[in-house]
Amino acid sequence: MTFWDKNDLKDPNVGPGKTVVLGLQHTFTMFGATILVPIILSGFGMSISVALFMAGACTLLFHLITKGGVPIFLGSSFAFIAPIIAAASMYGFESALGGIVAAGIVYVIMAIVVYFVGPAKIISWFPPIITGSIIMVIGLVLAPIAIDMASTGGTGYITATSWLLALMSFLIVVIVSIFMKGFLKVLPVLIGIIVSYIIAVILTVTGATPGLIDFTPVAEAAWFGLPEFTLAKFDIRAIMIVAPVAICTMVEHIGDIMAINSICNRDFLKKPGLHRTLLGDGLASCLSAMFGGPANTTYSENTGVLALTRQFNPTIMRIAAVFAILLGFIPKLSAIISTIPTAIIGGISIILFGMIASVGARLLVDNRVDFHKPRNLIIAAVILVLGIGDAVVPFKIGTVDISIFGMALAAIVGIVLNKLLPGADDYRKNNVADDEKEKADEAQVVEAEAIEAEEAEVIEVENLEAEEENA
Image (cartoon, rainbow, N blue to C red):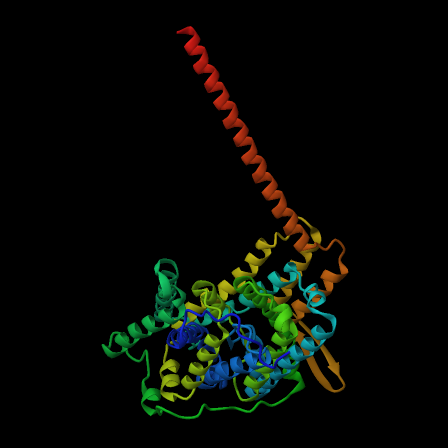
């Protein structure tokens, strides 16, 4: 086996020039969501330049570990926003970064387990009732953050101006998503931010809403410079807040890999293997957080572009990664982004965070989870209430006070309940059986229609013969 697998996903009809353009498109696709996380966490010290640089560097690291065979881009993870805020508020931003590094190590440990026991057994621990409910929690637990940004603009005071800016960005994203065609349709977040920002600039310059944007940071920022890296620190209390979230994000990772399997008609769980993709994702988050970046995760936005363009060449993702790294060396860009009114990001976040929850609900529907069964109702109910309610279980290890709460606690309890409660569904067999039943029903309908048509034709012929005899 070679260190770098042969690229059998490359389209021979697409030359180097078009490949670069496709890579640039993926850069634009990831841009809006990737910068949104450091914008939300900017009050704690997270840098946009670092996030962009690390998105590119971590994507290249992932491709190195997966032998260049999986068309994936890694970007800032939304799932870690709430625990980072909690950990940074109590123990400092650097300690929160240490928690992300520990979460990456959890991935590495799981990758080792997968290597020895195989992906099938691991996936069996995360049936749709677990994955769908957890993904819903990831979106819903972020809802208060979106509403706060939209209503107060980060000032702590609810204002009509903040709500108007949020409504404007919200409507632009909706219009682009629903009514635009072609390439523009896959860039609703980026277009929403740009158009809303231009309108905010006009309102500021004309004096219609003075003080809405402060251009001082833009004037003071250099055109080129190194990202402002921050070294992580390690505090067991912060680690126990952030690291368990890896259980939730590993669920996302498995789901994304399976989605890419379907789009590319490949089995990446076998080659290069789920253990390699988990290892790549985990080490990427370790690298990013060690120097001040956010946790990274496989980006569904870029997976959507794969489905749209049908261009699966992993080299395209690596080109996008290089563009992201270059953007990280432009402080002027980071300064401009930092002047975007928080309310604009809040309006867009209402959609983004809500869509995460909707994806979880869709997963439950697509897999036909039977909520007539009490066990499924109980598991979903416990995951949703513990996760959204931010339940806390405190305990001590020696003299250190530790707490597991929120999404991590919900995931752990949900997984345990799924294994303990009787009557678990075999969703794959159920779906296959349901599909076969639907096909059989369709065949019966077609057969019945054919018989009816044949009988009608016979009756018509008999009527014609009767008319001829009477004549």
